[in-house]
Length: 54
Image 1: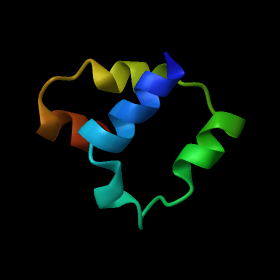
Image 2: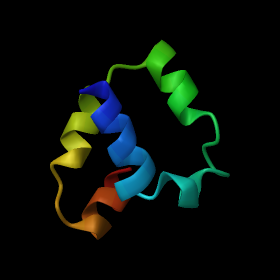
Image 3: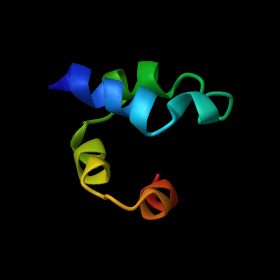
Image 4: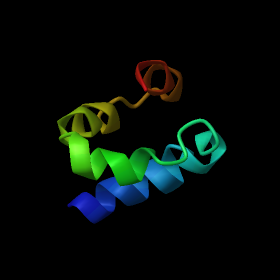
């Protein structure tokens, strides 16, 4: 499940587009935060709304 979430963040949500802004976010999230907020984000179908909440 976590691999799929990471893949979704990297590919579908355009992480690479924002990688300069948060270049270490994936590395630090696994150490300091839960994944529940990502589960909430992936359920938002509208891209503009999802980007707003990101």
